[in-house]
Image (cartoon, rainbow, N blue to C red; front, side, top):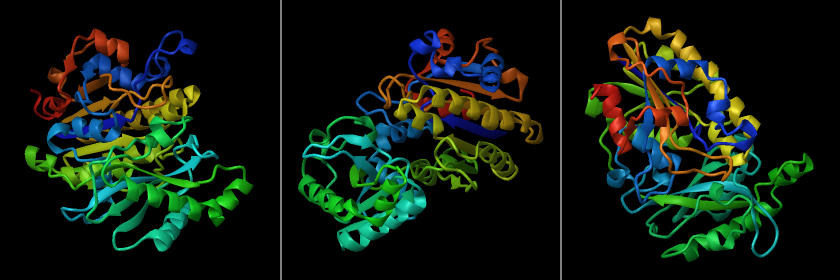
Length: 400
């Protein structure tokens, strides 16, 4: 049996007046996900355990069958795993966003992605921050676009931090890290602003009408977690396809091999078809493939209604559709499509509500044939909800 998980990050949403009370997922043209839902199993999955902030880290751990209450230590160390960064037991990894802050003593979070800065521009900035501010205690590591990493050797982890995408358009002082170790982190963030104020990359971006990466925002800190490999648990081989270090890092801990796809960006210009084709090719040798697409989540954070509908339609046509067309070459196979969490346009950040999933099998006897289309309302109508959500992977793999 082959297993394919197709995840549209943040696809789920709330009803939107401009869409006649439908969600973007319900309004989008999604013939392939509708087929999976109608012919297969449709339901809701509760991916955010009580007491956890809704985020792609917690949600995707849940999707892959992990109880975050037992293994989650922070977002930073998960990303470090994909970047090949070794963390000793006392080291703390922080997610380091390049952001655009407004002016003034209490600046607003103008853009948590610094205008979706390119990876090449960001690498130049992070490299200079490392040379100017890095030392035996603090080390900067470049990632993709605005997503980077800071490691604090023998650092503090118990402070409270806030994801920058949660505070777009809000003043930031009240959201600065607080608790043990916060003074050192504040100092580093202030020093970074001085370095970035007149950085050549920012001067050039401003000349082109782009937002500058004039600050760093540190959050999501934690120590390296201890996790049983998914591949050991189910005695399978597997891979993961994502443009995001976080997802690939989770994959590394789960025993999944990150697979690179040319043109995969983590945004709406990503290589959708290339991801699906690479997944089908990899499944000729592997048992399990997890394909992650970030674009719908990015559109939710931007509050971009048309962009989110288009990202969902692209995901359905170019990823789900391509995979479904290639199933005949794989033999016995199960496919699951889902959103990890909602990223509602109305709040422009993540929410904890359950998300719809659909499972389709090439073996007709395994399909429940819900007869319903894919979306939040129909998934609720199905009467099936998986909670706690980490049980969904057992349902998918073992048909429990």
